[in-house]
Amino acid sequence: MDRRAVFFLCSAFVCFLLSFVTPAELRWVGYVLAAGYALLAGASYLDFLSRQRGRG
Amino acid sequence: METAALVAVVAIALVFDFVNGFHDAANSIATVVATRVLKPWQAVIWAAFWNFIAFAVLPLKVANEIAKIIDTNVVSIGLVFAGLLGAIFWNVLTAWLGLPSSSSHALIGGMVGAGIAKGGVDVVNGDVLRKTAVFIVYSPLLGLLMGFVLVVAVMWLVHRKRNKRRVNRTFRSLQLVSAAAFSLGHGANDAQKTMGIIAALLVGAHKLEPSVLSEPDSLPLWIVLSCHLAIALGTVFGGWRIVRTMGTKLTRLQPMGGVCAESSAAATLFFASFRGIPVSTTHTITGGIVGVGSANRMSAVNWNIARRVVWAWVLTIPGAALVAMSVYWVVAAVS
Image (cartoon, rainbow over all chains, first blue to last red; front, side, top):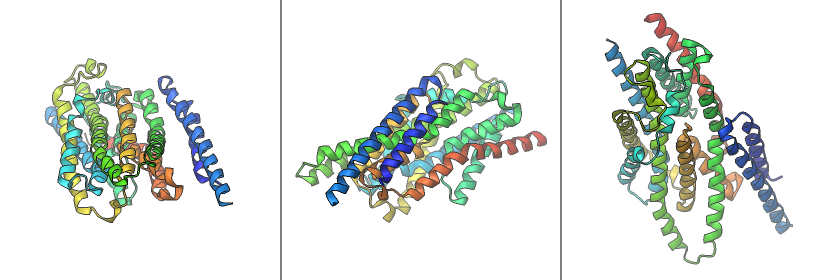
């Protein structure tokens, strides 16, 4: 289990949820953060898989 | 009598600003002192200078937003006094309990609590409060994301360099820039919170025209200068406290990580200041540091501290609001 990917994924989810209560002119911040964290979660998981393969 | 009370409350607001600088001095100078780029006294002067000069660089939008958080028609000397006292009491209480607390959010919570106690929830500007509340979560996450991306990008750029000593020297020099940028952002965002409170107080007392709150950069110069001076002096005195306690806690910091963490926190503070969003400087630098740490491995981050910060996010505004409400009712009963 990659803890870092899980943390980034949770952050993406929180930012996405928060964007609904963010004032309209700043809603894009929530979307950008959610997308950024989702991307990092994916990248972090790939990094985790490559490390696992390296060990195996 | 009213003028004397007004002067006293303005003085309390400036003391609050001083204490804010005193508390946050560590954030600005920790890395440059730890890596011996600057001597402690030089770092203190460096940070205080950028704290002070921030008024000339960044717009006063945060001050305008804070001033409008409570309907100025109900703002009175008693209300601001209760708000400030609520924030101070909350800061002292959390310091005593060992909980990390944001002075900025305590101030906002105090004003909101005192406002609700006087005029009900209708007097609170929902938009400003909502913006502040969501950025309690967004600002550290923004700092974390930028810190992570920046440190990964920098590591990728420098990993082929053979002369590691030269790389280290470059980042030691860059720390001067990142520490200055962070101090600039700190001075701008935090001093403006006090400016906003003083402006609201003076508008409420009919000493200032309400129009100064709608035009950025139209606040009287003495308010702007006194708030920046108070926070800069706080940094000078708080910095000396850090000098005394300098030791093992700070020695693990590396110049590259310090530059990335401070730069990402500074970028977050600049963004917030340009958009008129009050954020906590402590939260942004914490986000930057966690981002840099998590780029290496998750266990590099002290998650116990991160958990305590989250508690502070949740508790500070409602906690300070409750204290301010109680203070306001006592003040109203006495007067």
